[in-house]
Structure formats: C-alpha cells, structure tokens
Length: 305
Figure 1: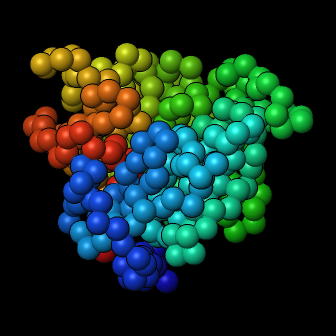
Figure 2: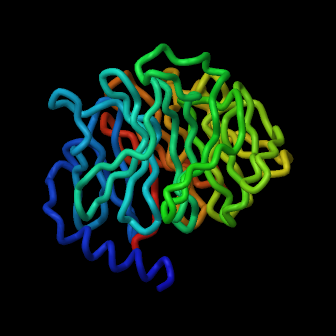
C-alpha cells in the first residue's frame, strides 16, 4: 500500500479516537487536508486536524508532562518521535497514536537527547544524542560529544552516523529522497549523507528544516531573530522573516515548519516562555499572515489526505 493510502487509513483511525475541545482555546488552528502537531516545553502534544484534536499526554513524570525536544509527526500519521527529559535521564522514543502508548528505543544521560525526525517514508528516525554515559545518571559529556544516529523501525537497529558537535536543542530534517539529513553543527548548518556520514557546511545558523520539494532549506540566525532560506548547495541565501523589524523583538524557536507543498512556512515567535504568535509566510511573496496568538507552537505539518 502506498504511503498516502496508509495515511488515509490511519487518519480514519485517528478520527475515531476520543477528541478534546481545546483547539481554539489554546490558540491552535487547522489547515485543509492537513495534520498539525502543536505543543511547547512542559506541555502535552496535540495532533490537530480539521475534524478533531487529539491530546497526547501519556509521557509524564510525577503526573506532569515532561519537557521535550523538537518532535516529529510521521507522514503515516500513526507515530510521533521525540526525546523527553525525565528525572535522571533522557528517553528517546515513539508515541503510537492508535494505542496511545510510548515506547523508548534509546536512553541517554540527563539532558543528553536532541531532536528527532522521521524519514519521508516513515521507516526510519534520525536523532541526535550525547554519547551514552555509564551508569545512565552520570554527568553528560560536553555538548561537543554528540552523535547523529538513525533508527531503523523495522529492525530496531541504531546506526551511529556521524560525530561530533551536533546540537541537541536544534531541529533536523531529511531530504525528500531520504539520502541526506540537514542538522545544526555548532553554529552552522550541515548536510550529512545518510550512507557515508560525510558532512558539508552550507550556512551559518541553526534550526534547519528541509523543504518537501527539496529546493530550499529554512534556518534561523543564532540570535533567533531572522529566518533565512538557502539552496542545498549553499547558494541563493535570502531572508524571509526578520523578527527585529516590528513592534518589538520576538525570538523564533523550534525551527520553521514547511507546508506539505513547500510553498509556505509556519514560524513560532515567542512572546514569553509560555505563549507564541504563529505566523505563516508565503515563500514566493514574503507575505506574512498571523495564524494564532498567545497559543501553542506548531511543531510539524503533514498531509492528511
């Protein structure tokens, strides 16, 4: 069965699950034929479609939602991957929407887990973590000692792709053909080949996100004030959003979220540590539209048809 057929089936399953009524009250929003993933540090995650909002609150510590890194929603709509900080370690795992269950596939020392991202065909997960310490609750190695890794969901095998200097708090993203991954290396944007682990630097900045069409990579400057686009070969750099040119400075966090057709970006502009203004930017024209204010951040956007 092709991936969009699987997604349609799983969307039907998702719509049968118990719903919540918090979508508008928390400042989330919907897009036609789409599933959006919302959340913030210390919050539950929410999958929001035009028909339903599903709250994912199974991963808790002491009865409260745990802090997470930038998560990823599979294009099959059935799983979410992210790393969560618990009392004495970080668990990297997958939440299954249908079963409403969480399964860990890697445990690292506290604060040693980074962003995770599903491959385009949803068969693999790329993630960054600190090199494991022993025992698990020992102090983490320095942030330079981080490894970019790939989990094969069918076999459970984890391949250490490349070391070191990969940023835990950034975003990472696959190329549409699944042959490369873009990730933040220290204060630069790097593209890593998935078969060899070879990396090339294409820009200065952080929180990279690859366009579904493959033509652009969106990223932020290190002050989280501007959003840029660059071609995968490092050419054509341009600014698409400047957070300093407005009524007041707004930090952009979690990375840019592409629309499935690659024509628009969603940007989370932080008002404070609790609420966000989400802006949609048309890539071709630069026109910006406010989608929500004082709500949750949008973390992923996948087609649901």
